[in-house]
Length: 236
Image 1: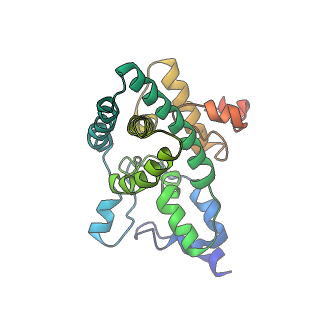
Image 2 (image 1 turned 120 degrees about the horizontal axis):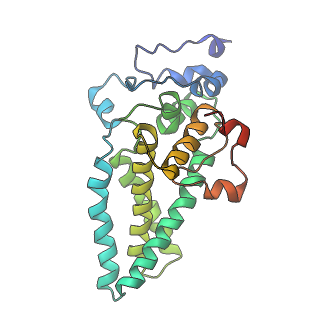
């Protein structure tokens, strides 16, 4: 009963409050507050700064890293057309990883104190405050840590000379994903393709939050049967 009666104070740092919601967290986090101003997460100014990232930091930091790894495969003897094909393969692998992480990790159901707290930091904050422009892209420090297991995963099914370009392609896919995600929330597309993609993603946030897990495309939603119902999507 304590968890059901707990009320989150939006004027105080949120991270260590949300865990107290218990089973009520799932409903609370999927009731979005549409405001460009994000909430405060931590009392500590240093910890708070680590949760905020401007969108342009993503390409600025990671595109040079991508170039380094792609050129590494070139220096190891691959032709430019070969490397280009490998990079495209890496981008394609990312699209599946993007879908899988979003569906099975970012939307995992939690009810324990630390489960709620970790989920809120990982993705719940984005659903609660979907227009918070400084928490739309993944913090570079966290990305750097996650790149280590991603590198090791790529090495498992590629050769020493193709691993760098494949890794670079996957990282490029991530950069495209994060920039696209920011644009879908804050851009004003004029053409049909980005317009439809924006509607598709807004549908995930405000209508059917357990469907439509693709960000850069609906490809894997079609493959795995998680497309949102058409009648609901048309209301957006």
